[in-house]
Image: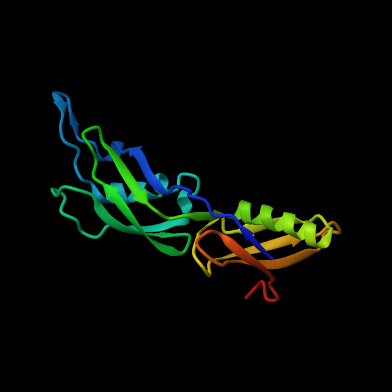
Length: 177
C-alpha cells in the first residue's frame, strides 16, 4: 500500500522575536547582540513551530559574532540531519530561519493508511503512527498500530519511498525489536 502525504511544514522563511538576543538600552536601541546559544535554542520553535521537540540538536558552529550575513547551521530534525540558514538578528531583534525541508506528519500517514485499509479490506481500522513527524526522505519510517473493530492490534511500518511523502505500509512482525 502506498500513499502521498508530504507537506512543507516549517519550510521556507520563518521569523521570530528573539527577546533573549536583544540588547536595548534606556537611551535608545543598540544593535542586537549575537547570542549564539540563545539563537540555537530558538531554532526548533522557529523551524517547526508545531513540533519543536522533533529538533533534538542545533549546531551553528563557531561563527564570528561580529560578522555580517546569515549563519549556516545543522539541525537534527526527526532523526535526520538538515541544513538550516539562520539570519542574524535585525535591529528589532527578529531572526529568520530558512530551510527547504519537507516534513511528513504521522497524522497524515495514519489518515491515508486508514482510508486505504478500509478501501482494500472493507474494514474500518483505527490507526496511530509515531513519531509525530519525519523528514520527507526515502527510508524514513513510522511505527503504526492499527486497531481492528474487535480491538485487535496489528503493528505496521510506514516507510517513506521518496521526498514527496509516498509511503509503503508493511506488517511489522517484530514490533519490539
